[in-house]
Image (cartoon, one colour):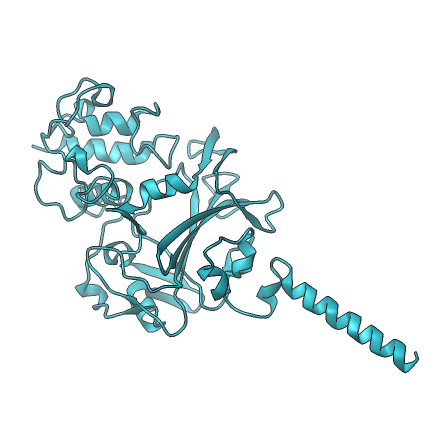
Length: 359
């Protein structure tokens, strides 16, 4: 090959390499999180542009993105969830209690929703459905939803939301069809509103204070976040609050029930939340019994009350408005009103037992 031809071939090769680095997903071969994309006011068209995963379909994060889980997770039509946190290098989230940690600008909370082919085998034949991002930008948190392609090679931004029909096998062994709703931007704000701002829900001390199996071993998450310089000023896990796992029958049923209502309902049902006018406040630390529903009459009667008198009628779960609304699938009655289309039967059974033993 002549020298001129060799030089042209080298230039073509270099150009192809530069183009490859601009392709979706290619950046993961060469770099870490795309910090600039997280700070861009305009959301990326493809999830891969943020470079959060070294292997998206396997949900393997790049360096600087840490997986985490909650003591009691939010119910979302039996979806499996993969959660991750990213805090920019050189910055930390400030510990807070009882509220969500104070994350610095450039942070991201990542949550992928997925379904296995059979809910009884949650780690086999898992199908990724959607990944939601909460990104802390200079003017506040931004929420974006990305829907995975059929081949699961990438996920695409869906500003207007989307309906997906999911078919799997339920916990009872029968077929289960789910009308899965990808939220639009306004619906994201509906759940994540605190006063007039958007805020995360899960990353609080009480919901993170549990062990997690990392690639290098088991560690308490509060310690792991501190040791990896994601979180500052956190107390020792034994000195921090901890919610209860609603499925752990070794825990008192009152703690299990209050923890479940806290993570599933209290982001709206609190003084600063969208449902504050109801007077029903379901945060874990609410100590006034009437405020969390005990013999509390609804603010406005109607279909949502089911004709019952109290939000929680002690000793009578079947005549409690809270249970009536959680068992409903009517969009004008059901609670929570967003994030589910099915009844969480196992949790409702636990809550019924909790109310039935009340005095």
